Amino acid sequence: MNINSFVEEIFLKHAETSFESLALTLYKYQAEHNIIYKKYLDSLGIDCSQAKTLEEIVFMPIELFKTHKVVTGKDYAEMVFHSSGTSPGAVKSKHYVKSLALYRQSFIRGFELEYGKINEYIVIAVLPSYQENPNCSLIYMVDEMIKLSGDLFSGYYLHNDDKLCDVINSCSKQKKKVLVFGVSYALLDLCDSAIGDFNVENMLVMETGGMKGRRKEILREELHLALMKGFGVKQIHSEYSMTELLSQSYSKGGGLFSSPPWKHILIREVNDPLSYVEDGDSGGINIIDLANVHSCAFIATNDLGKRASDGNFEVLGRLDNSALRGCNLLVTDS
Image 1: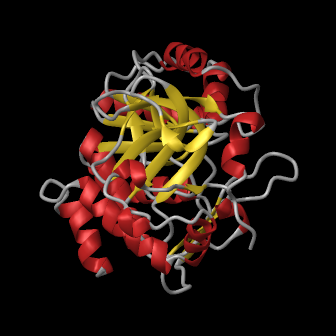
Image 2: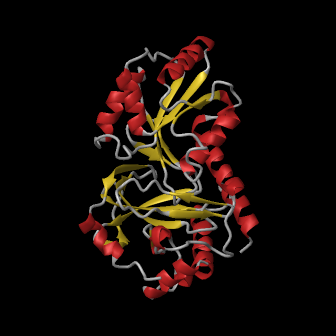
Image 3: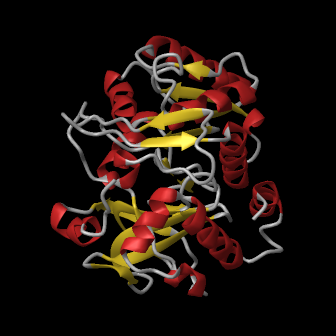
């Protein structure tokens, strides 16, 4: 398989080539050229050459990104992204990214498919700066978006509420689009400070989830109600991704996420990780991300969700230890 031609197909020709065909091609390629994935499939006695549908693909448990170097082909990386690992003693996942250009292509195209050109926005990051956390894939993405916006007001405003309010008010007067991008706890902290009236017509508030141990976890509905009241907006948008993926999914309100054409969601039976539930039923979230061409594109996550008939999906929470047992039993040793 020619990697460069494949990347061109997933981003430029996805309407001409079926997703299933591309996914099966990559599945068979990674099953041969990804040592960890191959070892995992071999341990299950899987002959991937016989796979003809997405449902016949066997997904790799996401835990392997914590315990193994998951790479396809040559062992080389431009950057290694780390998960936050905020729980005491937590082992961090590591994603060895061979091509930052491919990652940039994925998140820029994915965002612009949903929201339009990045340079139409002032990008306000309620996040740690890139200098503080250069190994976070989310912060790398937002840092690039700040640069692409080309606006002097774009930047990082975590723990700088007064300046942030001044910037938002200035943007309001200039009728500019404002994208406020932040982790849940920081957005709530900003609302709680009650230092300004965020009444901006073109403001889009996007939470990336996670209290990161800073605040008590709450339901998404409760979070969004608090943020809508605090920012004076009618909807709270959400971004769904993870260290182990190079593509994002977005919700424009109500918790229903859509994905770019090169990303696909399946919902597995929690007690049988090789079986799937019907649309509308809940189960474990499996993700195909074709942008993960250099690592593993077929990931069984620890998130609980359900899928609609149009391919959009909801994230309902995390699977508990008992629900994960069936998946964990399949994880191979080094």
